[in-house]
Amino acid sequence: MAPKSQLEMLQSYRNTTEGQNLLRAIRRAEGTEGVYEGNPYTMLYGGGQFKNTSRHPDQVVLGGKGSPNSAAAGAYQFMPSTFNEAQRALGLKDFGPESQDIAALWEADRRLSGVYGGENLGGLSYLRYGEMDKDAINQLGGAWASFPDHKGKSHYGNQAVKSHEFIQRSYLGDEKYDSQNSVEALAKAKAWKNMSEEDRWKNLPPLPPLP
Image (cartoon, rainbow, N blue to C red; front, side, top):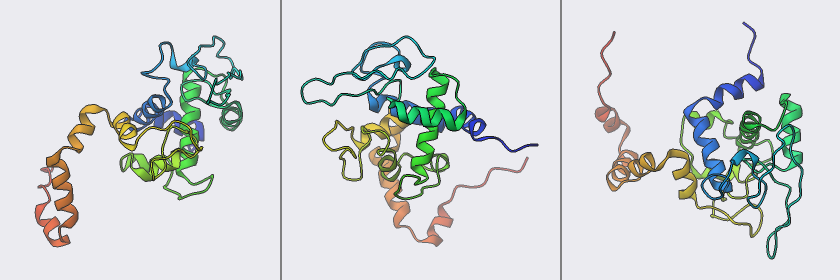
């Protein structure tokens, strides 16, 4: 069997829980989901809508007083050059929802792999075996200004930025986030962290029975 292409791997990842969580977190952080009315995938910078999804609209929108002008568009607020690079690399045919999702995952994978500098966390696989922690959020902040660095600031100067909690809550969903961050859960996590290796083995739950 031939190995999967990069496009096929990203398409598969899109269908995972982690893939959907990541895409949702980016949309909410960028304000295309849950802030403006309308379709996130046809969202212009500032909340307007465009119609033609055969390509990136490449339409500069004036930011108004105190805000920069921008040609960012779509659910993940791609700049034209960023999306065009992903489109060439992956052979994406349009600027429709699937193409935007795949391009966002492609960009996230590069950021989490340290392609643009910073720590190599192992790409998207980092989220398959862990959570959306501050290291991942910091790396993704190089692509999405709404994701904060370790100090809670945007990588792009004074641009609006979300908190670490907002990103993590958007990624996990309210119920799971509240469960993992309850007083009881945090106390258990702290106790486990401070436990000796011997005591950890003693406190492991029993293995399931063999089939």
